Length: 360
Image 1 (cartoon, one colour):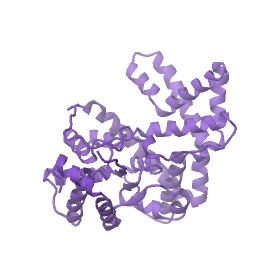
Image 2 (cartoon, rainbow, N blue to C red):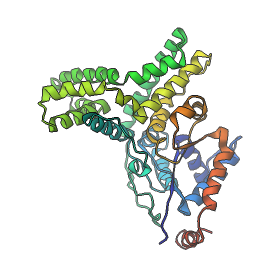
Image 3 (cartoon, rainbow, N blue to C red):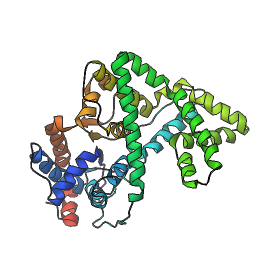
Image 4 (cartoon, helix red, strand yellow):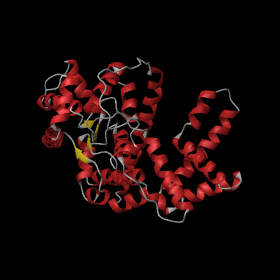
């Protein structure tokens, strides 16, 4: 079979939902109907021509579970995406933390690789199977917890918006505060989790205890603790060293942390300038996806709000994301980009695609 070099394109959940409606024949016509129908055709052709994959992520999974039709949407997303998937956003953070840990121990600056295969859970350059097997799993038991998490994030964002409206901090102040909060923020969360863990160990609620153990900050703490202990430190000294490491300025360069800080500063600038509409309830999910995957993937199709922020100065110049950013505001550019990928398939690949998938 011909060798492949597929692009990796991230579609946000809104895009997957619209493409699912086109596929299912349930989409109601509106101003963007022509775009979504043309996009579905181009995504399918680029996918079957082996020019790109459209992977799913834990951000998609969480939003799918709380949707009105989770099983159908999950099935359609996997089919549209070519069964490709990305590692979880928290795994991306741990990967970057571990590079900082290594750099810290070696007394050097961190060096972050941006190889897209490092964040793919599946192999990128394999030919698509001509059949797909999936498990019709029911994840509805997690829906309430996910909704509560989204509501907590939305409440925290509401409080932050009120603070920005009241204090009117400049962009540079918010950016510096967000970047330099890396260590203090983790220490605060860890203290809460350790106190919570002590309380729960005295109760009869093992599920709540598992939630503490599965918290990203607690998992990160335990990984670092084991790392320092493996270097010969006793537990008490290792715990102190984790806290010291978290305060190390090299962590400020972690791509996920840095991108998140810039996005928060950018939305604060909008609020200070008088924007009345608050960020959407899904804003934090969008931030998690962008901050985790934009340094690695080739392109992202996002909601207009976040895509607009990334096109502004200084985000566009300072972040220098690998991903090309598209949204409904640049829909023609996205269609043209996919068209270029489709045209780039060589004759041999086209011949095999026709034989295997009925592509013509």
